[in-house]
Amino acid sequence: MGPDVSWWRGAVVYQVYPRSFADGNGDGVGDLAGIESRLPYLRDLGVDALWINPWYVSPMADGGYDVADYRAIDPVFGTLWDAERLIRAAHRHGLRIIADIVPNHVSDRHPWFRAALAAAPGSPERARFHFRDEPNNWRSRFGGPAWTRLGDGQWYLHLFDAAQPDLNWDHPEVRAEFEAVLRFWLDRGVDGFRIDVADRLVKEAGLPDRPVRETGAPGFGSDGPRPQPDKDRPEVHGIYRAWRRVLDEYPDRAFVGEMWVTDPDRFAMYLRPDELHTAFNFAFLKCAWDAGALREVVDRTLATHAGVGAPPTWVLSNHDVTRHATRYGRADTGFVKRVHDVPSDRALGVRRARAAALLSMALPGSAYVYQGDELGLPEVFDLPAAAREDPVFRRTGGADLGRDGCRVPLPWGGDAAPFEFGAGGSWLPQPADWRDLTAARQLGDPASMLSLYRLALRVRRGEAALGDGPMRWLDLGEGVLGFARDPGFACVVNLSGRPAALPEGAPLVASAELGGPAGRLLPPDAAVWLRT
Ligand code: TEU
Image (cartoon, rainbow, N blue to C red; front, side, top):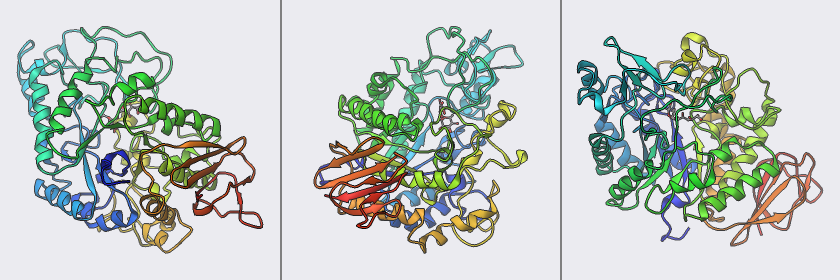
């Protein structure tokens, strides 16, 4: 990338789930000191930026997505001083910091909601939320009703947990407050924001009942027919135009939006030049391991983004979905919603995850790595019920095990749990066989997932100079995805089930050993980068 290209157009962003990344003070929960101590690991991994899930003061009813104070760090993670130091230290290592902003709801311990509870029905304190005398038929994204009743008879709306009351975005104080919060963190040097549930802030006027939908929502437990609240209201765009004006007062900052909006044209509206810079590509995350389906998603992604001049992103996993090393080892490799009673072939899943890593990093735009994907971590299903913290588990009565299985603390080294996660155990138990997956062990093995990520990221930044830009498909036969990028680069992914002959070019990185007498055969479920 030339120096004139904005960093966010081609960045590889590493997602840090702070509770589970590294524990600096030995209390069993990850923290900012832990992140700081592992910055050299992230620099050597070769990523460009960190997106850190919410670090604010929170009762942790939803892992920090229930914020009680947007201007302070939760004591379990550290202090504001620590955050400022972490931002500076990251910058010294050449790593940018993307904070997570949670505007749809606050914690029920947030001063505004406490004031609303203390005030009477119809009071100005309640006007910042959605209070009603009667609930409508909306269901929570986490299972169960989206309304909770108070002692005085009024109900309040929460699209997620009851501990996460939804804000009323028609209220000018709500709008002003979040613009001030953006400035608070921009002034402290963050390079951007990931926007939580970006498509749901504005509700349909009057909060009318919604038609009953038969299908469960992707990602969360299905508890029968579920009237889903409306999302993606056109009025939401005014919020992001205002936010963009705030961000543009600071040089080189960027937004990444979290919208589960499937219609490509509606999705693209968030990425217009005066709104968000980027957004997570969940169509790619959900796509099955299938050449035709992937090609279609890539084409649709490129067309969608080209229309508004925004760079695509390539996302395989995050803290809300089943880890892709597990998904790709199943008979059905697409992601519709979390399931836990489906077998997965570990070797096959890892093989495909290696190939998918090369694919996601070679496509034009920005790529995301969820912590632990670079170690090939699987989803953990056998957590004891008592250890589970995700409200989804409780609110669905266990029908959906929830998201704890992709949030198990990272194994850094050693032979026994907590695998150097910290000095004091880990808030979720780690599988004993993660001794073979620790970062320390993988560093010493050139065939490991970690070694593959490190090599690929070095080549991506260095000689291949990947990132944003054009690509063109190569016709390499059925089941084989191939594309070329200038100057002189090709990526080939074999999803055909039999070895595929490589086009001209010297291999730069391969996800599996190449076969054939001259090493020109790419085995199934493998990918290679070529210098052409
Ligand atoms: O998740 C938003 C969310 O609900 C999506 O994951 C989506 O609705 C679903 O998976 C698929 O339709 C965000 C955070 O990422 C998550 O961790 C929080 O629990 C949630 O918001 C509430 O803040």
